Length: 209
Image 1 (cartoon, helix red, strand yellow):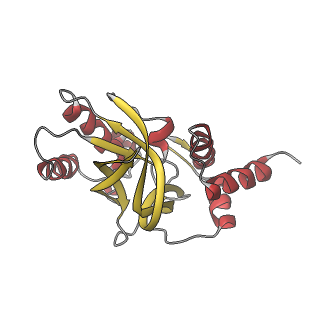
Image 2 (cartoon, one colour; image 1 turned 180 degrees about the vertical axis):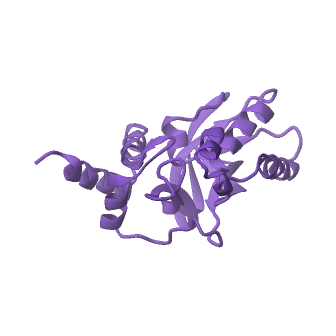
């Protein structure tokens, strides 16, 4: 995907390979050696993790909430017609899933995850506390960097749906991303009321008259 973006003349939008690797190294350097590594998923990681993991559990984080806060000019949109993707932003709480990585494979799997998530540098990987069935674990989560141009701010429902209906990027349509995430949360028994509402609104708008 990264090479395809470069071939299309949009390589300037990407974090360099060196910066991606440095971000992962800096994140792992602050984690106590020998402790399990968990990753908190709240968007496409729920229905398309694309990484090998040892355990998957429902989890909740406090102090952050999920929303469409990032412009996507590569994955779910283009520079000409940007889409939106989810990010954690400060305040509230968020239910999702936590993945425990294999002790002997986490470096390779996280390297893949970083290349997927740290595309344009609009996310900040952070260690946050996740509650799993009453037990607190440290987990990596991708939080929005509000100082970056990719920060979309708070948008109204109609704006989000209109953007999702027209945007399509290297990973597929923004509309499918929204619907798949809403559906996966419902199937997991942790529905997000706003995402479910947005999904219903979107499906109603794209049905032929």
